[in-house]
Length: 354
Image 1 (cartoon, rainbow, N blue to C red):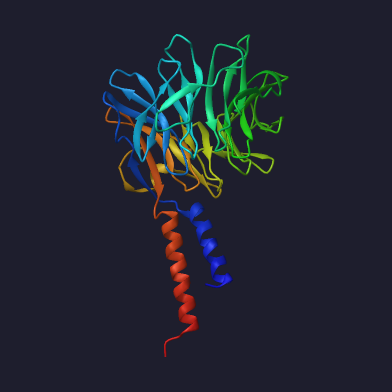
Image 2 (image 1 turned 60 degrees about the horizontal axis):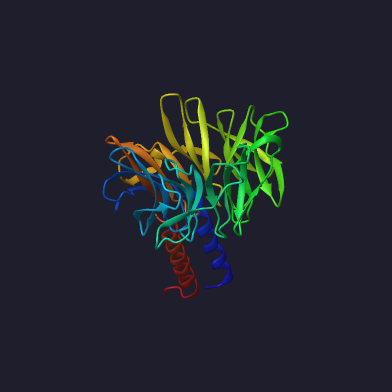
């Protein structure tokens, strides 16, 4: 295949990630441990594996992750109940343990899926910490109390937990990290206003606001940040914070963004919330894009990977259920179809029928 055909084929592959706006909805409850009948998914990695929470019949919680699509429970060394909030492409999971234990809340890392054992990564001197993000280098971000229990965001790398400072105020909260170790979250400034930020190589940058406070939630490898400000979801890109609006209701919040700039989140009013996908400058209700699989009303989405797979949870038949919404056709399928079509076109051009 010549260079021109490969160029066109590459364009087909790139376009599938931003233009595949039909989805198949599947449940991810298979393999819930005995006594656990509910699950809430909070993150999804490039292989489609999840991190989240398993819930038993009495409402008790346990941190969970999927392996080959089957939920597994993990135990932490600080006891008590646990929650998992993020998973990297190696299957390593972070969250919080000791929620009901004697030690108190601790940021935890589960980096051995075979054993399923999670360990505390410590604190910044206070009596609590929680982890919310992890990249493929094993760098972790989250929150911890200082010795005076003031809340500070941290980055944990090479076995050390580092306070990332503030924008001039008292406290910070770190929520997301990308593969370049850029961090986003929320910090107080010198006027005691809360501002979304990017922390990069020791420098914290204020991302501004749509009016009122702003909060950073996730960051992709291009340095694009999503979150919410003044009850409106935003996408921060190329130095500008852009409000995404809402499809209806009075508020919207963005929770994740992939490398193609696709954003997922929720919108609604005081009584109702629904899931949205923002792609190529337009916001869609995710429920309107589901054409295959389960006929559920999807309310809460929390993660999207670079293949466009979306995960979250919703309340069905009196219980919480986790799901994956996958683009259809799959991007790789579209790519193969496109390449085969181009190959046949080139073959017919070089060898026309007589």
